[in-house]
Length: 566
Image: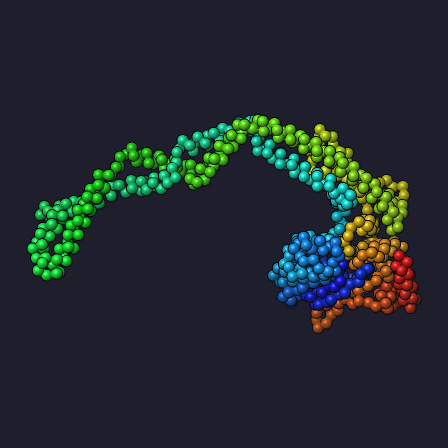
């Protein structure tokens, strides 16, 4: 349960720290004083989305921290999130003006979704959003299933598993397609396989073809350059070749090579030049002989290049093309031999539909059984909350037959239950979402919470304005019901009702103060005298008569006696 709350720079709160009691904690105050801010800070600890408008004006950062006492059962939840089992859970959430926030759980970094999942086992909060959720019939199914899971959880897992199998079978059948689609795909794969195999593309062929195209594009320039080079080396104005000129020079130097070392060195160098010139002339000659700019060869290279380019556009690189060829062959084999596979899948699908239908019918029976008991419990609770003439019933849709059920299959079964209510004598049952008032909705939600609290293990319940639309005798009934819930667990309740305030074991008064041209929300923990004064204010009698204070004191004493007798 929540032991301590520390808030800094949140909306109108500069800084506050609250120590909560184990039973009924009440928060009250003037309208606009900031009761919702305290609830918002608690919501942040439960994983609610952070909005940078929460940050107090003029501040760079804010902080919310909650310290929770952990039960043995809740320790198992901690281990699921990689948190060491401990008797204390400390949640810190720091947020800044840039909209970012940092969440830490016992020092471990968390995301908001992880925090929300974790805290679902620690705290239940009932505010306007929760009340409004009852206006959606889909929420009615969720409520019924909450009770069904406590006794028949294996039915849900079996149904979800079988529905997953059914969807997988349907996916495989869709991939195979009908006869016309299969024939069409067979033709496509055959064409693609033939196109790739007939092309016989080699691994490095594209590189070679591109090189040849480049050579052909420069053919005339290359031929001219080679011819001019070999002509220059093989002929000059005197009719000598470069090689013969160097040879003559070698003969001359050979006569004096022993006369001086430098002459011998020159002879060796020139001899090397002679060998290199001969090799160059020979190589140029070979290149000239190897030149082939035949139009037919040029056309062949261009056609080959177009083929490679076309296949590359369709299938990608050589590696991707090879990979797709293998995929196409496997797909073709599967399609050409899929008749038996399709027939098998069809039988599997039929068996899966039968299993889903069977499980859905069983689940429907469980739901109807639970709904019957739930209806009795809700009417009992509503009776104690001043709606003793109410009638409540869960109305189920008629299930489709096996032959027509496939269009309605889901992992949640075939039921679409809806809550029906008759709050007054002589009135027929009608959809709850269409006729229930705000006060009736508050009591209905409270009745549900009383019932669920008998089975869940959540130790902290938060009621945000559970008193909407109620007063007087009904308010007293709601106060007594809250006291009963708080007798076995921690309850935090934001209220405007004196009757609920009188039941408080721990009472916080929320006020708004202006200091130094700035507005602050302050929270004061009231002693017994302060509680009586606040009860008087909520009753509307404070500052009117001394009798109001006496009445408030009597209301507080009566409430204390009521709780002591529980």
